[in-house]
Image 1: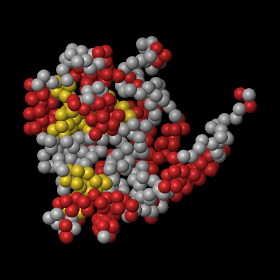
Image 2: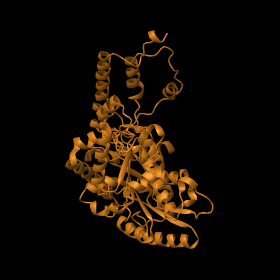
Image 3: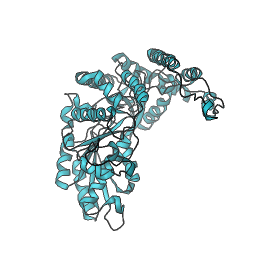
Image 4: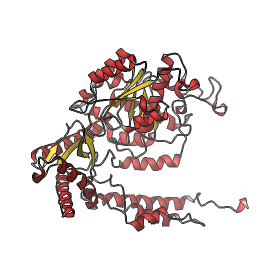
Length: 493
């Protein structure tokens, strides 16, 4: 029976080439027409149900037919982040070289746990580039690619937890978090990302280990309040161990006072972690580079190449300044991977010893291809372009009588409110109007933005990450907000 089996997954190379050409043409057609399409097209109930309830084929479906299904059912209802007028969350369009690299990485399909093959060496180089771009020390540090900043944060905070326990004389890998040890405390601002709380919960610290620090009027961590919190926690018998700062929050793009925080962490013997998922690469823009001073003194940094670098998802990176400590945190080598000292590549560190994953995908290739295609100067120009567009949008808002900006613009995020003349002075009415227009705006397909809450105030939020976005797109965005507000008024009548 086995001799007669012909796998449908092992096509001849002639068919493979044909399918590859079809897929590339389909992707190129999709990308070529994006600007002419609505930013977002909602699915009908029937379309949703069709995808939810589809059956697994009994005999298999020819791949040509599957490509048609992808084109007709998936490409017709994208998330929208490939469009130049998509301003939601922090979701970039895919860089075209990154798309090609994903395909080629899949053709190689290596496990990047480690070993003496090309993918391993390439990953080391690309991580070094990321360190260079943000000014992170390289000599004694270590980094590895993970799925995203959430996993990068978990990796970095696991190292911080291990370090804190080791500093007080116990091994958290052996003993866990036992009751006889003081409660560890992790500090982050009210603007800190939710993945930090998730990491604290998964690491056994619990959400009660988080001490939220208020922010100032520019949404940066209040250092005076932080110092008072540390002193109060120590007086209560708790053990402060880590400050999680932001190098570009997802709400406003605010950058915490990293240099002051690095000074304080050194004085207080605390681990400084920097969430640079979105903003850390903003350091290459000379106009804002001084705001990142101090990031080079952090013990760990989380970066998402799949955000501002436009590397296709998933791709995050964890950077830790003490590679030996990171290895102590995670290394567990099973017998089948142990090698004799001095033989083969026994002295080459394996990435799997520095994180949780054993089998790891070749994420480095798409980062390498995007960065090499862009070049250092091209990256600087991209970041400057996006930041300049954000300043232009802020100027348009400031000049309009029916809009109000509600946060400083530091990087490429702009937060504002629609302020119709008839509602000015009516805070409840303004909030109700702004809340109502967000889903209506998304459904129009003219532009796409999301919302947030800043110091208790509801706000519209636009994040600019697309290289093809133009000043005209910014004007269309504001007109689309006005249009959505008009639709909201009609629905109320």
